[in-house]
Image (cartoon, rainbow, N blue to C red; front, side, top):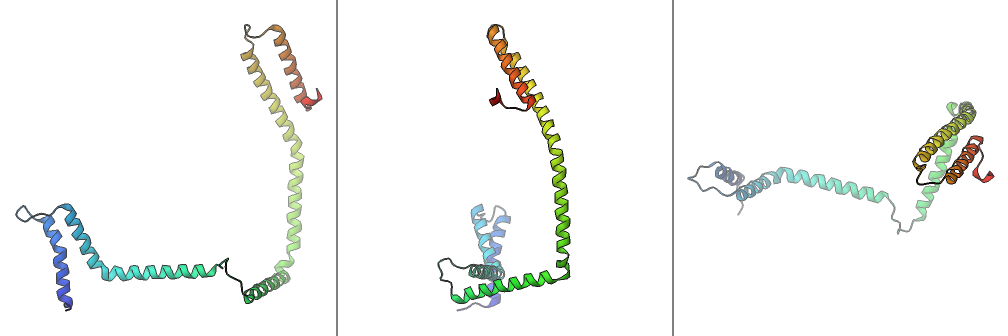
Amino acid sequence: MRLSSTHMQARKMLFAAIPSICALSSNKISIYNEEMIVARCFIGFIIFSRKSLGNTFKVTLDGRIQAIQEESQQFPNPNEVVPPESNEQQRLLRISLRICGTVVESLPMARCAPKCEKTVQALLCRNLNVKSATLPNATSSRRIRLQDDLGTKFHLLVRRRFIPQCISKAEKIELIRESLVVLRMVRVGGSLKNK
């Protein structure tokens, strides 16, 4: 037996009012614990929102499912055998793309492309010439910086190592000679193999 719409609404209102009455009551009415109040409020929310939000959620989820299915159909399955019609369509698509390329080349703007290409080529050549001209200067400044760094590091190393008790005089002289050879090689630009 179906209840009338007004009777159903009154029942829902009563069901939703019980938790609020219990929460707002004084000591004379039995107060339910917090879990019961939360559970009843949640049930009331579900009952009241089922009609409006239920349809909204269903429509949203159905739309999303349909969109996902459409997207998945766009990607070919690798296990699927490709029909010959598909290969023919791809061939026709490639031909039409080539035709589009020839049409674009025949446009007036495309005729300006060689001039632009020459301008870009000239600009790139100029930049390359500038960089190649500044390269020796950069190399020499790096070499000078390297010499300074080596000198500084050598000075620090010698200062730390030359403790009179740790090293003999002959070892000190040999270390200085080897270091000077290395510094001369760096200044000349040679390598240690040319010793």
